[in-house]
Image 1 (cartoon, helix red, strand yellow):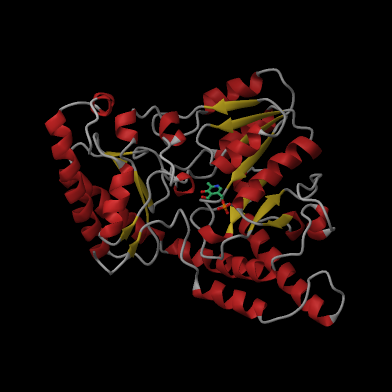
Image 2 (image 1 turned 45 degrees about the vertical axis):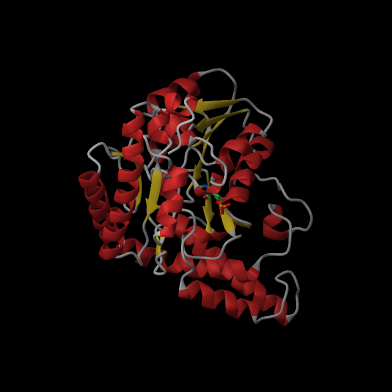
Length: 395
Ligand code: PLP
């Protein structure tokens, strides 16, 4: 067991930035409910409203368009709820690679849902979108994420927004993985609503925001008091919001460090391909977040790989971390038409500013050892997954 740990799972959650931690602690040391009229309350309110300005600046919208939530999941649920309950949306067109936060929320919205297919490289198919928008059914909300959490593939959100608007519809962009890595200004995206999450950009867990074009009507999902412009009831999470804004402020500086992460990812993928000639990097031909790599080779088992890598000191994930713990096939790889035997071994490495060349080299060696071990057994049985499983062959 190696005691030196290397963290390669930044898409699951990023380490909290010192600036964010400091802001959280400072807010925790204060007393005051942001709804109270006394001095303490006004101090808390000031923190919330300054933070609202910082988050609004990320999107290039007015602060009144920002609703603080408990995270990306709630922000996605709120956006879809508002679309259906307040904006006259009668049908949803959801990309087949959306996060469960969007997929599950859409499925329970009470209106028909159509899935938007992706290409083999994991990019939403715009011709298919035009076709879906042309169908009968009234006003559509298109849900398309900015970048996929598993593959890192960047989606044509601006093009989708143009198509949606041309057909009288709206667009919701899950910007949870795009924030801090890509430009998320509404003017460029053409989005009507978007979701972000603090813990993906170096802020604390359990806080996020739903951003919307100011002027759009709204309707709360969580009811109670009149907080957040009556769009989200409940006493504001002032320390969380303070930490979120602090992380958002340094998000721009961190984006400047992204080219180095792209170089590191190149080092990783070249190293892996040298060890495994049959390596497949998913979405490699598409534009991707420069710090994300999802890869596999036939005959591997991701669950076992994650454990083997963990014992060697590496934190990586198999497909989506949000669904790990259960052996379920990645819906993203299914949508991309990846066959079972390859999908089963998919490992995601998502880099962050703390990662170094020597860690990458050690990860390649560790993965290579596991690959050789699994591969030997696979070759011995000489059978594809279904037959191996039917024969009860253990990896
Ligand atoms: N959307 C995407 C693309 C994500 O990757 C995640 C988290 O993994 C979420 C939404 C959910 O965000 P949160 O963890 O803040 O609820």
